[in-house]
Length: 402
Length: 120
Image 1 (cartoon, rainbow over the protein chains, first blue to last red):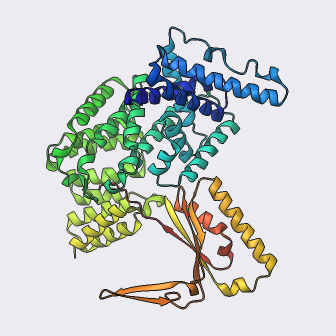
Image 2: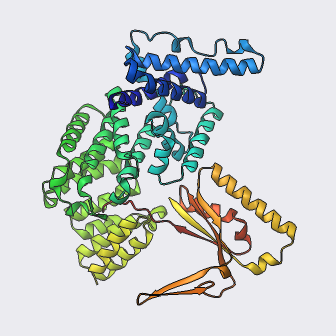
Image 3: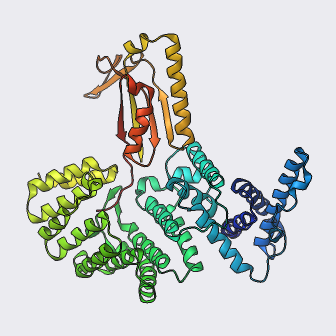
């Protein structure tokens, strides 16, 4: 099959699923029907050509499948009449003149349904990648390094939960939950080291694609633009973040390897968003990422502005992680002792044993000249992290201080 | 996050159980495995063969030395394991507490290191 058709089907799949769901079919049946329609399209279109209205074609075929199943089921129960009215009329008729708007809306609503706050986070992620992203269960399982059977069960459970909790296609969702899920998918991909990337689906690419889609359909949401910019500006650094399998800290990365196009796109996006919308946490984080990306050398980093932005972030979305980053920024502008003073305000017990707190403390202590305690905290951080490359990096820092 | 739940067991305890009690325990294991499979948390898991039938392997100066049996004589041995993928260490501990052998001996909960990481 040509990649053109493959790409087209992938972009149409969530819209078709959304349209069928809009009619009130349950998630599992709707998905099966759309899968069959996609299969039929993949077989027919390369020979017969792409129909004039490919989306309408898919919806029509999927809806017919649903009717067939329903009739068979009804006949089995001897209640043929039950199928009447079950399939939505608008899924059977040609799309109206405003079809594009409806199509966009269906994709969005499907995304909101998959990210509904009543679902557990792992279910939201799996469903979004499956239903909206169009990844196969096997691909998602490989991306999260679990057996396919494990992922199948997660997805099945998520679908059942959707049905049980009475969530339907029109149920209002939460934009912030959608953004959280997309950012989680991005980070899951971003933290993967080079050695394992080959077997794993490109989660960062998928997260960026979905966020771009969301942004194109909700251009007036500043936080959507902010998240897209944040992803682009972070992903821009990925070519330089690993040296073989070792993590390279931001300050030591070869900045000539950063992706200039991504930086330009992300910077333009965040500049426009900050000018036009009420400020939000993703926008502030994107602005911080842009400041890092714009520095030609690590020592050119505008830490004063970054520290100011972390102050803003601390005001609108306070969290221990923000405090931690503020400590790093203040360590640069006002010296390591100022950074350590901020760290001392971190009383949150959830973070007490967290490796990043220990790592930042070790780094600041090292700069303050207290090498004995710095070494101790590098070692403590190494013990606490669950990431092999992070542990290698931290043990390396500790060894340098011996 | 993935965790390895290592099940330590003492064969002497097992031998004191009646057939019914043993069947009951095996049924409990089956139920537990089923539960964590359905929740989408089970990655892998299996009982291990008797330690006396195992080998301990050492390579010294390029020479491989293989002896029969376990590394060290002890009353407890590693009898089986689960690998689970769950949201937190608290959850892993909660799962470990449901493993039947937790009542007789102990379950060790260890994080499986991820190959990914954040630059610092």
